[in-house]
Image (tube, rainbow, N blue to C red):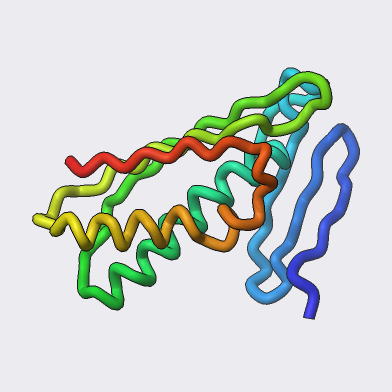
Amino acid sequence: MNTSELVYQGDLRTVATHVFSGTQIFTDAPLDNNGKAQSFSPTDLVATALASCMVTIMGIEANRLNINLDDTKLVVKKHMAINPRRISSIEIKFDIPERNLTLDQKRVLENRALNCPVAKSIHPDILQEISFIYS
């Protein structure tokens, strides 16, 4: 089964449809690359996918360990290089509610995040700057 189907709608906009659920994601080119920035750019989606994957894998482990990660917030910042135009680094800052997690629990969760499938799929030339804050 296909994962997604994508249609170029013109004017630097695409719509991707997730085949299984029918959910749609729109992309637009960013302002600095002739676009309108009315939606995520493809490179925004790469950075966002990394954050989503990390917290999802943490959530799977948290469920196994009976840890509540609800209300964890992530801030994602993507940096672009110019020549060639590519993602040079992705910063992700986790804000995890402090729920009396032990140091070992924090290490396990952080290790799972840092080794999620997307993190391991991104080219090693793309710097991943990840911070975990427990508040």
